[in-house]
Image (cartoon, rainbow, N blue to C red; front, side, top):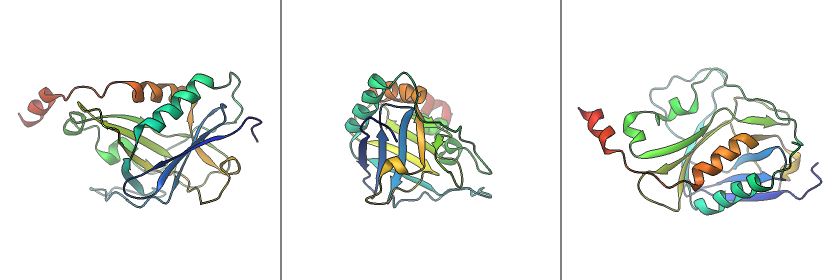
Length: 197
């Protein structure tokens, strides 16, 4: 158990449920889902084996997530405390392929940060956890899109310190902080012309 307080952020999702983030200025930012309701109907369906459902939606307010990640990056301890296990993808396509966000038609409208797979802490069952955050290009919206798969469910009233979790490592948290702080970026109209030419 960490000796420092654990800071928790529950980020409401417009479609229902929450993404829950926690840290104690230690090895990384732990991530769970709580009551997410919107699953993505993947086409074509090429899922096999332990493939986990794909959830998608919109985090209502980007600012608290941005502040939470920046706070962790600025104050994280020098000596990581949690023993992290590298994640691995088993018998399923990576998240970017499942969402088609790498297609030119998507990149011209969205910028994204994919964390695939995430590290884990504690006993882990099922497919490796993956998380992708996306922002609309050219407009500084307060909300932010996401896709998630394989995240553990955090039940109401559960103490985050006692449960297995997906973990955004310190290095990935630094990249994520830069992404969340960066301007939304231009709409890439030339890519649109290339895609239709």
